[in-house]
Image (tube, rainbow, N blue to C red; front, side, top):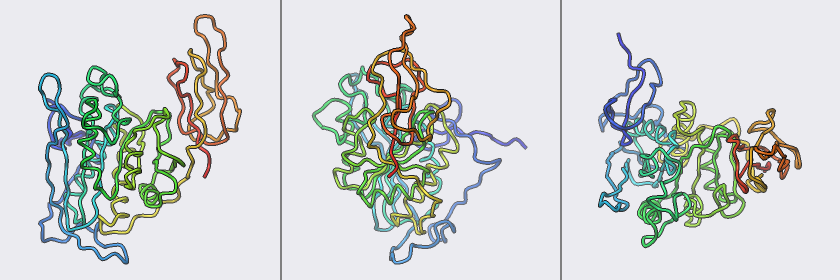
Length: 373
């Protein structure tokens, strides 16, 4: 008997074939079977019991999809996103999005698996899911939206909560924000580089957000002590806007970009499922985790003081603890062979990101260091 090894899905979670456009997802096992649960039947045992002390009614999910128009291109073509709604009995609303950056694929893959779980579940509340929030970057297979569409704001994750009268990306964010602003919790799924710790981020001092981060369950949690900013120090991130609006929010960084990593996808869908339990959307207690190392994003980033070639020390890696002043590598001028900079750790802490792309420009981040909390 011939067993399919891979499935091909469009980003609306419908099965397609190689003649369609979408994403390949390798099977999780030799064979897969998903029961169809009638509305009056008991739900699977994984969602069988409500957390103690929480009196919630749970009903079978009603799933709908809609296309939400975000804006219009010069040709007149509309730009829309697919919004999935999973609705049960009255309860909290959780908003989840992925692919703000077009090469970050593990988030959409995790949300496809979440879809398979939620459609067979009973829930209390509403789960809103947008698997590909940045259609333009995704279709161009680029990290940011091509500058031809928005030369002022190519990075969608720097314009939240948006501006209806602003640039194209600001208008997109404003239309999406209408879905976010009434949520009781929010999740923003991202994918890092090959040399970044898989981690979840939240604002320190926000107990609800920290509970979400703990429930998500990555080995590392990085907290921001002040206003959340992007890695380049700029504002306008989704997490900053949601936190400012009083919405508990986390950002998850799931493995590397440009490919689907099955371990990261599994961690993502399991993390979201556990987070939904923590919010009592799913009727089971959150599964405890062995322990989460909590770090503070309060150290100055290590940056290039000159442009050139960065040669990183071969014996260091993300997850290593380094001392303040410890040598991490050097920047050289490739034509004259002169050393331009000795690159050193700014503070004692854990390396959570490290540049392996050797050509660097002045001001570029070479390493991110977080200190133990």
